[in-house]
Image 1: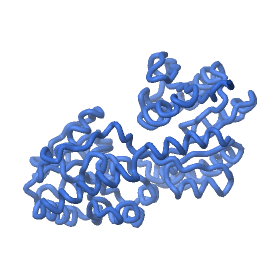
Image 2 (image 1 turned 180 degrees about the vertical axis):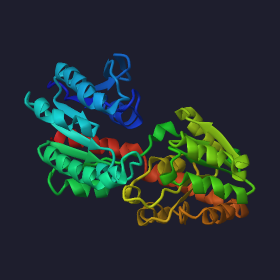
Image 3 (image 1 turned 90 degrees about the vertical axis):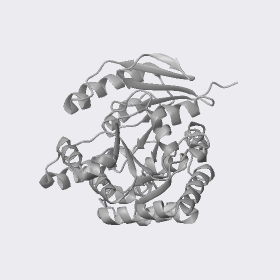
Length: 366
């Protein structure tokens, strides 16, 4: 009997217990393969059949991380002697040649469209964003065309990689089916809505909060503001009286919020990266049995129209958001029907089980 493939996930950025890396990919593959994860600042152990290898590192200072933390990842990875190394961060691409020199296969998992994401980075001066984005895209192209495979999360990103690497697989970041039990519909509160995730201006948080001033409703906010001044501004607005602010919360609290709410809001602004993104919170809203209020993007229509599980709105118009949510308040039976449709959509199509089998076959194919 041949030994199982030894798969090793590498990250210098993500935290221990990352949903995509550990809970979805590593755990689901541990029933088929020998799976390892290298992650900084945790504990070396075996958990859920996955062997976790950790080391101390500075992950906050970007310059230190990209040099010394990445070097530490390489040292740990070489000791594991895997058949396939699965890279989860762009800064790890420079390790590919060394890992392949031992006869291993190397794949890159592009969680986002990084060149487009760079264009949205507020901390990079606007005059430099195009230059940095172009430089990274050239570097990424050079590195990834030599890899044994590439994985990404949307058809658009996959199409970009297929221009220079023929071995590309779409592994979408859908929620785990067993993490979200069937909602108790009797516990849904008709006038409670939620917004879960990063509380950034480009993700529409200002418009969402301001819309609440015009509604007899409550909005659950779960996440962290990236801009203290934006947070202070919104806390001074009359709309803040309608806000239940939870801050950063764990997975159990997220499920508790979703159980209460009837509508989950994902009104990202039309930036280059968001127009083509599959926001994980959209699918988690569906999993929690929430109707979805989404940005009026063509991609979102493609994802939701067939299931009739929500509404679309101009994400930069807080009055339009208020009017859409007002429809939910005025038509609670229709809203609950959308909630049930959203859950059916999650169970039928937008969950991790199908993606896990694609990942299993992808490893074998390389």
